[in-house]
Length: 86
Image (cartoon, rainbow, N blue to C red; front, top):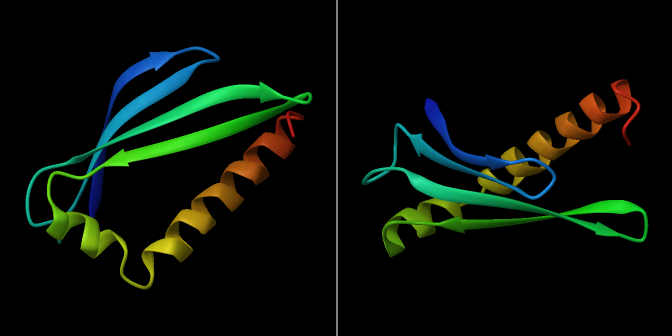
């Protein structure tokens, strides 16, 4: 499945907003906001995703997408460790 993304807003140490679209999506891109907060000396990331329709949300909730999200965060952990930031 192909995917594209475009950053919409980046506020250092606060949040990142981007739009992402998948080839199999029934309509345009979803909007994703990642918010960063300090909590007990660590960074807490909260991710909110806004889908354009119930159908798009249902596709995202199908088996396989959860593993994709987990894989992405595992890769982020590796990058942060390499940078000495984990």
